[in-house]
Amino acid sequence: MSKEDDRSLRFYNEVLGLDHLHYGMWEEDEELTLANLKIAQLRYEDFLIEKLPTETSKVLDVGCGTSAMIKRMLSMEMEVHGLSPDATQKDNFTKNLNAPFYHCRFEELESEETFDCLVMSESAQYIPFDRLFENAKRSLKPGGHLMICDYFVLDDATGVLAKSGHKLSAFMAESEKQGFMLVEKCDVTDSISKTLDLASLLANRILKGLDILSERTRNKHPLFTRFVFRLFRKKWKKLERDSVLLDSEQFKAKKRYLFLLFKVS
Image (cartoon, rainbow, N blue to C red; front, side):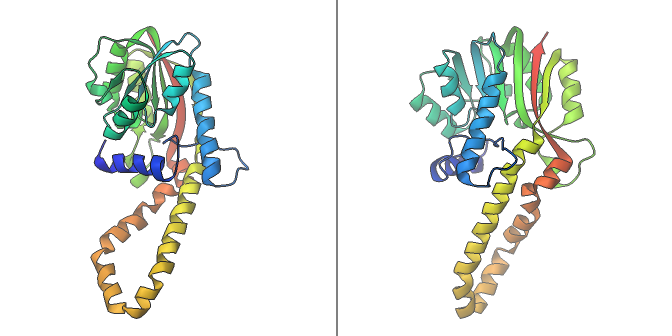
């Protein structure tokens, strides 16, 4: 995870006051507000907790974010370990929780510990999927479960939205090849896509605010304004190109956000 990812995590947590860093699961008629995003994110967490196999007592949370879900599982008297290569997540975890933590990428994990369940909430996309299943097999007890909730790219998808996330068919083929049986699959794309609608709304409000604040400068110093625009035109053009990343309809056309529960043979 890069320094930019680290700053983003701190922004979501410290500035926006979000306890979770993942998408939310929205009801159809919910208003697009930060307050409702927090409710939608808690609904997402509730969903994952309810999907934990009943025999689960020892869990590894891969990419543990703010550790909110780990605190929840600890309160349920589970043994929970955390893993993340991110420095902010490490500091947050080690300062606030009395539980084992691995400061590394999952594909680099070397431990004698084995688990009943591995939880990957929006972290599977960052792990080469052949290494993901190889290390998951080593890290799970016989008959253990791998729980993934993440987005995947459809095979015919193109453009910028096709650049992040694993190709769905290739990912599923690799899971079967490495001996993972699919126990449950749930498509939650429609539910989570409203998170993008909120992000787009907030981004447009910020841009409009900057435009209003800069109006006086543009009127008084037009030459300086044009110079600044030329100086940052590449970044502005990138922002325009990347606006598709917040387009929920484009997201739904090119990706699927899935809950996947596998059992290792």
